[in-house]
Length: 121
Image 1 (cartoon, rainbow, N blue to C red):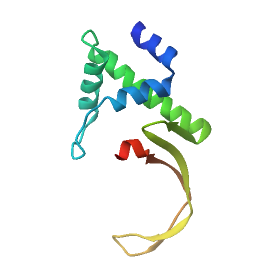
Image 2 (cartoon, rainbow, N blue to C red; image 1 turned 60 degrees about the vertical axis):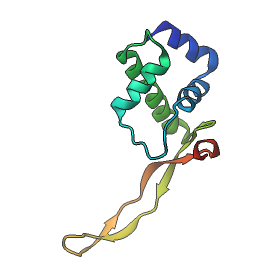
Image 3 (cartoon, one colour; image 1 turned 120 degrees about the vertical axis):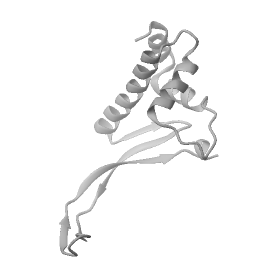
Image 4 (tube, one colour; image 1 turned 45 degrees about the vertical axis):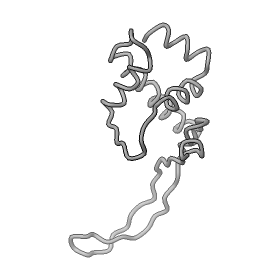
């Protein structure tokens, strides 16, 4: 990982760094972005000397830290962006769409995202 990136991450804190990187993305509401496009935007925001690999590592660090945070504390809040939290779905009955037979759907856990008011604006 790039030394400048590591220094910035340590000095500003992970959530501050993530908020700055995401808030700097000037995107239209109707714009859809895939992972490759996001990596390109991150690469541009990191500067002229940044490589695509460094941008991929940056994205992997953000996603990995988010996963670890949700697993550890059930909630990750990034100011100015939103909150990732685990939610438990209760067991319920459903129907097999092919046969129409009633089936039992077990309880499960999922991750939900709630956007901050700053992101919604």
